[in-house]
Image (tube, rainbow, N blue to C red; front, side, top):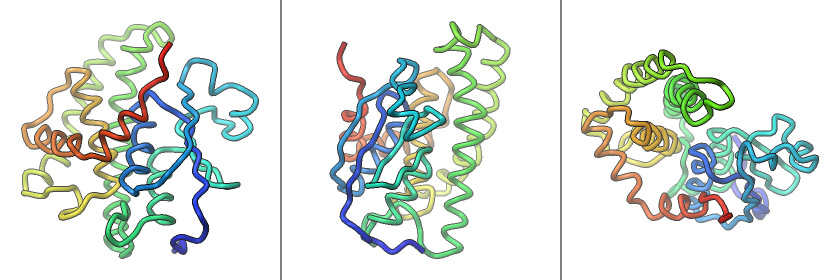
Amino acid sequence: MVERHRHLPQLLLWGVGTSRTLRAHWALHELSLDYELRAIEPRTGETKTEEFTRLNPRQKIPLLQDGSFRIAESPAIISYLSDVYGTPANALAPVDPLERATWLEWCFYIATELDATSLYVMRRHRDLKHIYGEAPAALESASSYFQTQLRHAEKALADGRRFLMGGRLTGADLLLTTCLTWAVDYGVPVSPFCYSYMERMIARDAYRAGRAANMPKPG
């Protein structure tokens, strides 16, 4: 296990403007961490500069730098920040091995089945149709798949849980909430349980602060 607080944070986050960058901002605020921001956006050319490509050859945001250490992918960033800087009161990832395994299952399920396989397919053929082309059948199929897969989370929340892991917020909640707001923006139906849960999450001070920090720069 990573030793907590092994060094003073030297945190620099690259990226604004997407649900995935929002997750990193939100985690930083939940953990009450100060950080610098490079407010670059996707598909603007800013991720393809020589400077950023040296840091992340995949040319994707978000990217977190902590001193000389670099890590991309929003679930990994959340996990890293929690493991290194989380406290017993605010950690976003469980320490107990069995709880950790369940938490990872939630994170992988959300990142793959809800985000990459469903919502990002919709983004490609909706917001980015000028690049990937119009595909009404793909949009309909991805929306239907999201609703089918969301039933796993719906069942957990219908059991009376306040958060996916029970009584406390974890990074899995950050992932699910951003997928739910994304789905609602796209007009994908979500159950009352999920909608109520989403409203509780987006009312958190850290979410609101992260969302404000995640806004693209004017102009």
